[in-house]
Length: 171
Image (tube, rainbow, N blue to C red; front, side, top):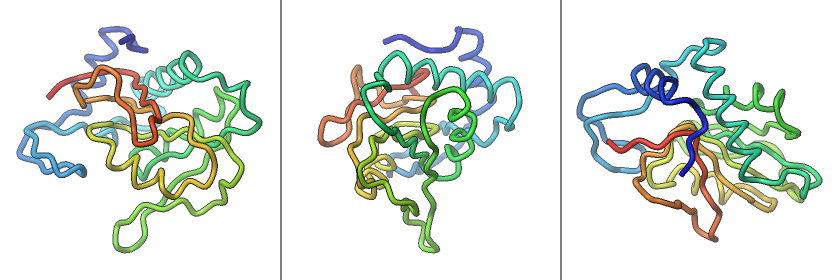
């Protein structure tokens, strides 16, 4: 699987965003390491490296010209700040997801008739993608993450929606 940043950039991203401890991830999995994209400051060099990697990943794996309108649906706070910079690099519109007071993800905008790409900072089991996927009213064409920690060669969501990533890393 191709990675979309240089090896030294991957190392810098991981060194900055990984914290160690005892964690229960959103997926319910216990882990001694957690990827926290919020540790990477917006407008920093590492942030721009991640955005550039996502843009290249999307361009190489998804033919955006095949779709009239593509909605980039970012999944919660970690990924929401990626949306607007990606709109500057790709012919897509940004539709940020939100969390209600109970912590449930939802899409506040209408997406009926749109093609969609889900974007998140990290992919482990796909549970966050699946929660937002069911809220998307259009045709979902892919999911993309900065980091894939699933250990799977070719991850897919239900309904065979492919998952692409900028970098892979096993914890």
